[in-house]
Length: 297
Image (cartoon, rainbow, N blue to C red):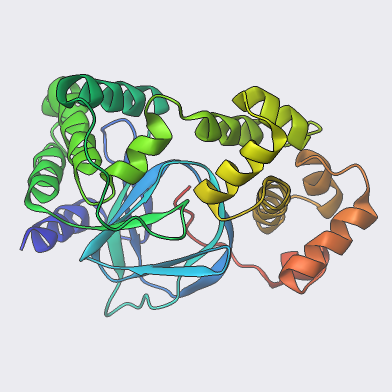
């Protein structure tokens, strides 16, 4: 199976656990052999492909478990809980992480619309949005193998890397999660643009009216469309993005007060109160309980 070939390619490049650059911009390889519980994280626009083992993510109460039979598509920044609780030395998590460049994805989505007059929606659009799992198909598997065949060959990576990555992304946009992804990157992706603005301006005051105005919608219409796209209300999303980012910063060694200020909280007491309400621990308790772990974002 191609998953076995992909696993072999990754294992040849990696002798220890970690996340490394493949040599192709936007493409990383990873390996994890110790269990990591699901903890607060922020998924940036990305595709995560598993060749061995399994990974978990929780978004607004919806649990996603995926392995070598499915890949994960996250076209917009999302506050999640993620981990690898099943990883072990005998069954390590091995896979590929691909960052999604909005410019490239937008170009592909528009070119597909121009070429085919718009592709039909998936037959099974999930109730929950934000993350989508998709079955491997032949086009996806072939494109991924062609891309990873370049790893370790610098001249080939330099000449062919981006064209083969584009081929893989095209396969994703045509695949089971294609309609879902094209909604984020195609024409009229106002919610995706709003989320991108939020994720890069967490330190600044963020109002729902401003978000709606930026999207060119009334507050009521924006609220409805935002919740349809993310499963969360705009207020809940902003709070989760801030608290998840803060949790990651604290786990990385930043002080509680620094993390709170860095994600837009001006009141340390409010930050501690909301943090404990969401995670069941004070920020300090959270930081003391964390251990360094692989982050795919």
